[in-house]
Image 1 (cartoon, rainbow, N blue to C red):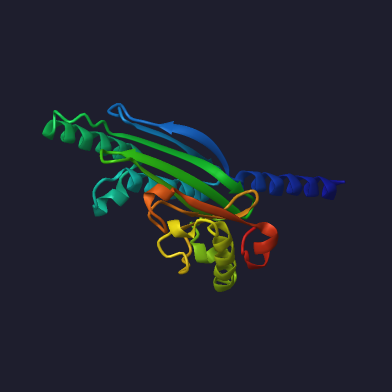
Image 2: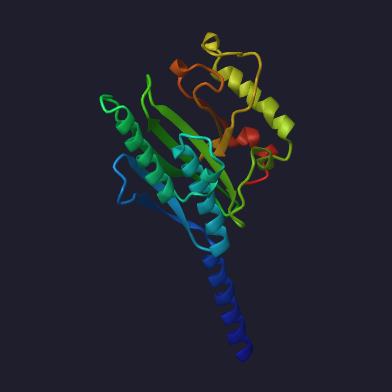
Length: 236
């Protein structure tokens, strides 16, 4: 009887540890007292300390880089709040230097969980910045994480045979642009996009504006179904 009691306690202890290590997300809106022109709504990881910190730090680094309108090394060390305030300060400096300009800056950054399992988490961060010019700048970035460690994963780490995956992706890319090849810079020279991630249907590949086509073409994205790409995946 006593042995059964100890086994039951051990079961609940293991189950509790598994629950504590699981990563969940809540959506948070981040702003500051100084902020007037930046709106940020992003997923924030909750759960195991080291894992959530790694994920949240990677998201914060990307957002700080997105809000930067200058190339400074110290940008990497800014918090999201500091980056919001810096963006507002730059706008105030612009208005002081060009008081007659009708241009109004704004920044909108949104994040969403595209895919999450016990093995991998894929997050999309969409940023739109308007600091004048003919049009604003829309950029979508994918972040992939090992769900057990919170480690940020490079595209190559997602696959057990990156070369074979590239060949498969080339076929899907050609099918996707078959009736609009004239819109692309070099349609017969295939390159993988910077953004490769997971969604509920398979592996999504996304090219931002200017990556393989002019701004007028917009984003280029397509999904390779799981049943086609499964042999090459390290994570599911």
